[in-house]
Each structure stands twice: as C-alpha cells, then as structure tokens.
Image (cartoon, rainbow, N blue to C red; front, top):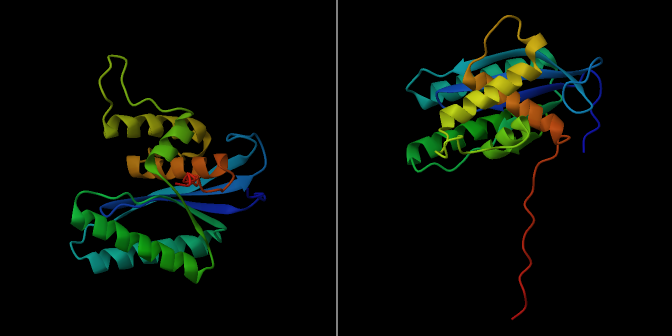
Length: 196
C-alpha cells in the first residue's frame, strides 16, 4: 500500500486507439472525497488520434504523455488494462499503445499500475450490476454513463464548468480506483494443484 503524500500528482489514463482520455489528480489537504484522501482533480482532457497512420498516432500519444509528466511532476501512473479483443488489428494497436506508455514511464522511472475495466467500474460504483431492473443486460455504453455520473459526483467541485467525455471520465475512474486500492494492483491468487 502506498502512503500518499500531499502534492503527489497522479496521471490516470484510459488508452484507446481513437481517443485516449487522461486526468491529473493531486493529493491535497481538505475534505476527504475518496476514502481517507483528499484528491483534487487538477486537469483532464483527451488525446484524439485522427491519423490513420499508427506511427503518427503513437508519437502524438508519447508526446502528450511526456508533456503531462513534465508539467505536473507526476509521481504515479494508473491505466486501464488492455483487454484481448477478437479484432486482431485493434489488439495489436492497443499493444503498441501500451508499449509506448511503458516506454515513457520507464524514461521517467515511473511504474504504471493497471486495472481491468470491470475492476474500475466496480470500485468506482461500489458494486456493479450488469442487468437493468427489467432483467435485460446493460450495454457497455450504459455502464460507462453510470461510471461517468459517479466520478462527476466525486469531482463535482473540480470540473471547472467543463463536461468531460466518456474517455475522460473513464480515466477519472482509474484515478478513483488507484486511491481506493492504495496504489496496489489486484493479483489473482493461483490455485494450488493437488498431488496425484
């Protein structure tokens, strides 16, 4: 568990090939809004990658992440974990993006803490329900909107009269989860095999 210090800055990311959401959180003093921490949302935005050229997109992501690290003297990076897609091209591009994130983090001697999409949703919402009241399954978009509403409630005083996009609120859920988890990654315990 990390003992966060006042003025620690955290960069939270929602990596995506089309548009990577990011936010900056700062450990501060004052009223606690996430467990026993006062976390201020300092800034948020996104990195749209409209280029069809993957190389140009990766350079744009690298440059922006590096600027954020330098500007805010980042102490920690947290990111949504890449998931395996059935689409090979998407899976490859996400892997390349995560490689760029790892490279930039290594340049600045920072570790990236990853959480799965479902961990981000369940930690941010307190619990997760995948079905609606009528018993039908919620869509991914509906779940994203639930998370967005919750993080906007948590950071209502720090939104600067801006309405964040769903990519940006997903990055905010990574920030919330990181604080709730004390900076620890979730590790699944391996089952012991019985002797034959």
